[in-house]
Length: 139
Length: 139
DNA sequence: TCCTTCTTTATAATAATTCTAAAGTAAATA
DNA sequence: TATTTACTTTAGAATTATTATAAAGAAGGA
Ligand SMILES: [Mn+2]
Ligand SMILES: [Mn+2]
Ligand SMILES: [Zn+2]
Ligand SMILES: [Zn+2]
Image (tube, rainbow over all chains, first blue to last red; front, side, top):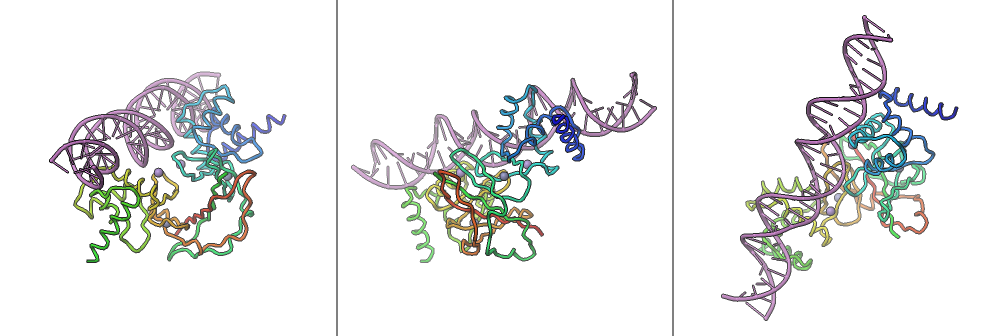
C-alpha cells in the first residue's frame, strides 16, 4: 500500500508540474525524491546510480532533460561548485553548503545555522535576491 | 617616467613569479594590473578587450596560459559564478561578491562589510578553509 | 653568439552540455 | 476502443569552454 501511495505522490508531483509521468521520469523522480535526506548529484553521477539501481535504460539526454524539467518545476535546485560539472540538489529550501573538495561532496547547512549580522546594501537600483554562503573545508 | 616605473613594476612582478616577461605577458599584465579598481573577467571577455585595446595579437591558448600562470602566482583569483565560464578577479584578498545576473557582473564586497555572527562547526575531521558569501541581485 | 629552456601559437583533443530529428508513448478525441 | 495529437525519448551530431600537443619563436645565460 505504501508503495502505491508513493507512486501516486510521484504521479501527482509530475502531473501538477505539467510533466507527463513517463517511465523514465517516474523512475528518476522515485530515485531522487523518495529519500529522507538531501541528495546532491551531478548528471554523470545520477546516470551511474540509475544504471546500478534500476533495470531501465536512460539516454544521457533524458537525464539532462528530466533534471532540468524538475529544476524548472522547482523540485530541484542547482548549486554552484568550483569545477566543471553542474551540481543539483534535492533540497530546494533556502540553505547553504559546506564543500569538501577532497570528496567533491556538498553538505547542507540549514538557513538558520548561519546568522549574518552585517551585510552591505545592494548597489543603486538593485535589490538582494538571496544570499548564498559557501564554506570550503580542508582536512 | 611614471610609465617606466610601471613597466619596471610589471617586469618585477613577472620575474619574481618565475615568469619571463614576454611581450604577451607584459601586455596582459599591464592591462590587468595597472588599474585602480578590481577587474572581473572571463578569458573570452579579456580576449576581446585585448584585441580592442592593444595592437598585439594573442592566441586564445596564450590568454588561458597567462591567466592561469597569474592565478598560480597569486596575482589573480578565480570566482565561481553560476554559468559555464570561469571568472577571474584581480582582487586576490579575501572578499565577497554581489552578482548581478542582468549584466553578468560581479561587484566586490570587502571582507569587513560582512559580519557572520553564527556559523556551524565543520564536520568531523574537517576544518573550515574559507567562507565565501555570494549575494545575488535583482532589479 | 650559441645553447638551453621557456613560451607562443595553431590546431587537435576533450569534457560537459545542448540540439536535432526520427521513433515511441501518453493523453485527448471520436 | 481506434484515431489523432502532442509530448518525450533516444542516438548521435553539434556546440562551448577548456586543455593538450608539438612545432616555431623568443628570452636569458655562458
Ligand atoms: Mn541548468
Ligand atoms: Mn583554473
Ligand atoms: Zn543542499
Ligand atoms: Zn572580486
